[in-house]
Length: 429
Image 1: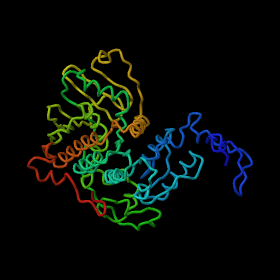
Image 2: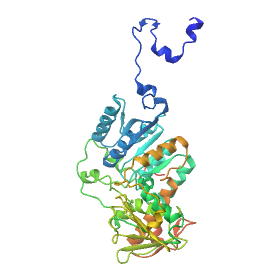
Image 3: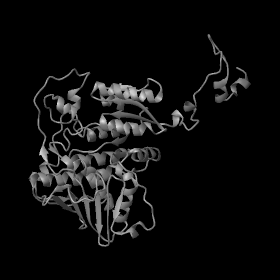
Image 4: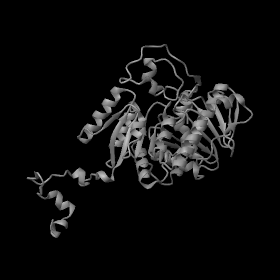
């Protein structure tokens, strides 16, 4: 090869006709603009490679949010249900115009891929924490749907694992990235409402129950639906098609089912935690009275779980009250304030229906910058502990007091037994 040939640049090489041993390139190679990072596309080398685990109803919505992002390359899906694996592969392949999306029955195979940088975990709550910790140990960043944990102990282990592995973790508490909720929390955090007195969360159903077993049915072939993998860390029980279909609610809150306290609560309480500057969770939780359950933070601020008495601002409402004013917000995208002067001439953008696109974008930006996203593991841990502890007070129907230093209930054997649960092998963490 001549010296001149050696100096041909790569971009010119791609456009040239060269004679190769045994092969002749008869026409210039056409490289699509998407592969070169032109016309608004991001070059493949600059994309964040993402895989998804447990992509059902909610997971499909999250997947759409990821696929909207031009700097994402989604490469693989894992699900215990064959029909879901096939459906996600079809969607992704049609999006990219290829057949490259791989399918996995065991999530550990996806985590073994060296090219995968981040994973979307949208399984049922039974799997969230265990799978997130496995992903963190495999060196993956994590976007995890909520509830993120089944109990208090798991919340603490998850947060510690994310800190130790230095991974980026975003809980699916997407309201943290919506402007009207953010502004309401800003008013509470910065003293615009005066000294903060009470924060209110909507639990969407105040009940606590024990998980049960439905009648045994004939299990499908493992290729169709892997029942053993579906159960994962949960106690074994016979196959039942209704249990399989309701993965969103299966083992929510572990042996002690969290109900609305943990479902909407992990959104609403998360916002309340943000309003009190993401401080540690409350130290006292009382039995419900007149449709309300009151908890108290160490600084005296009250956290009140309340089903009724809300203004008509949509689902997932929160309210923050200080000595000088109050603010209430909900999923309509609107705010109500004790005084218009709290706006200080600002116009708060109204985005209804709690989209997750902004939350996904926050996660991806933090994957690049290695900074903490809005719904990071420590914030999620504190909000979930508050929900689990409230659920324990609800279940026991009496007051419980929580020691923040020891992360256990004070002189309360019954409550402390509910801090954790047995995990089925081999999924112990």
